[in-house]
Length: 574
Image 1 (spheres, rainbow, N blue to C red):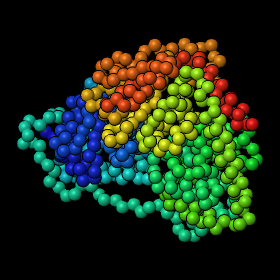
Image 2: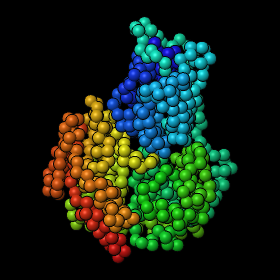
Image 3: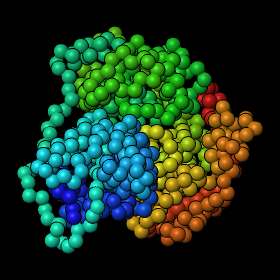
Image 4: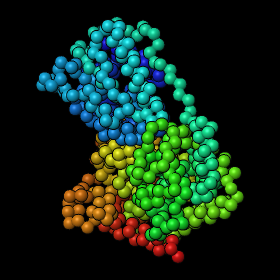
């Protein structure tokens, strides 16, 4: 039979708008499947739990919705772990359900039974076990309360994934359709109203007074999801306050004239100079890919460093925060931008000179890149540059971890003003679910093309993302196959080790051919610049999902990126 508390779950999901679930098959989870499916909730079934969970996370990040996940018991549950950790640090809203054995069977050599209670408590914002199949009214009230607590935590400004564990006793399957009955109870989902996080007038006035008294102001933006309203607020702050916006393209801010995206290419000593020391650093967003931004934060804390986020205490890796402001960033940044028009006149010339110093450095790097990129030999760097130049405006770009994201962010200024929404797995920065996450993003935006730049290790590690009959047709994947973990050759700390080739890079020899053949995906290849230029239009124009695999030499990749970055600094210094 379908337990009453599972019927409560299906009614709750319908009422609260959790209408998309990703799941993997199994017997113990049958009550969850049947209740949700027969209630009319869409369920995307995928064989591999790890890939499934990452795909669900991608859908949640791109849609902004709470997305459900469920799977059977035992080791199947453990396979959700990598995606849950990534979702926790990206604050992705996943509503995770796991089927379990009843308590009396745990640690009793029962098949596929492990200690599931609280198994993800370190990487979820709420975790609980649902009462067993007890039909007492108090048990149903308990279930309803836990469902609402989980959703409340999931939707909080500092929310993220939640986990509910469902122990089931046999039988799992209804004997007839008559046993499946809708829940006949009062409303399940509690409607919670949260006011927008704003500051009292006195606190806002104090911040504005401090802000306007400081002529050298800098906004540092970490990883953010695309947000047009926040972009507009940062644009106003940049223009009215002569405030540069330092970060990399993973912050998804579009429009500010004061964007500084290429500080990794600045002359040595520029960021550490006294002229670049800010009076007030204003920070938003999560982590940074850029090494130079991290170094700047560590060595130049500013006279004051304020971080804005709606709720909770932010990461402070360098211990230099002086103020945490719990407010909606868009709202407060807009207020500061408006108030900047009333800055003391004597500060304006200092602010303008400060602003122009940063913008000039950025312009010099962009000009140097345009001059030097045509001279780069066939390599991952040249391929990434051409790929970014060719991307259509308004496209979605997912960047795989290790070198692909670094190449793309180093070259982000060559996109010719195109508006690209950028997604990454930079919560924990692993390669284990990048392709699956990108497919989830494609699920959420079926009318937009989703482009993926990924390395061979990332693609092969997550090839189960294509182990499904439901691959979205709007996905375009570019695989940089350099025969292993090329980042270890480029990192100065590992590049000189004698063990590097055999024990770090792994020297892998596989390609995407078998995976594409099994999945029925169109595959293009290129081994040199001529082949790449020839096949690129066909790859972009192909209707349906396609993979373009380019083959490069790891030693050439290393030498070209080192030479390119060195020459940019030289040209930029003239």
